Length: 154
Image (cartoon, rainbow, N blue to C red; front, top):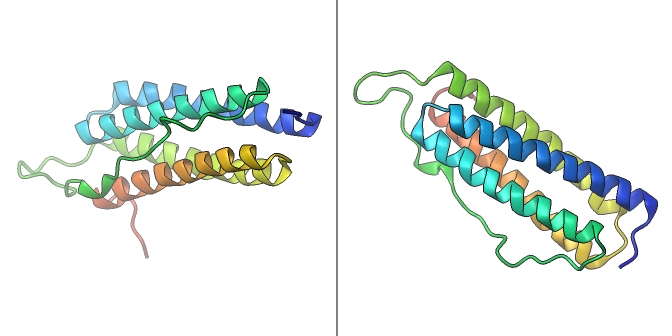
C-alpha cells in the first residue's frame, strides 16, 4: 500500500496521539478512586492500544486488521453523585475524567482531517472505525461526569 508523505505525517501524528492516550488512561486508571472510573479508564486504554497497533500496521504498509476491534463499555450504568453513604465524588476523579474528555474531543477532530487526506478506502474505513470509538470514549466520559453531577447541561 502506498502512502503519500502527507498521509504518513498525519498518521504519525495520530500514532503519537494514541500513545499519549494510552499513557494518560493507564496513569489515570491507577490513580482514580472510583472503581467505575478505573474500569472505564482501563477499558479505554485497551482500545487505544488497538488503535495504536492499527496505525502501526498502516504505517508499515499493511492492510489494517480490524479483527478484535470492538466496543464497548457504556457508562450509562453510573452511580448518582452521592452514594448511599453520602460520599461525594472525588474532585481528582472529576478532573481526570474532564481531562480525558477534552483529549478525546481533540483527537476525534484530528482523525477527521486524517480520514479526508487518505487515498485508500480501507485505510479510511479503519480510521473511521477508530474515530467512532474515540467518540464513544467521549460519550462514556460525558455520561460518567453527567451522572456524577460534574457536567451540567444548561
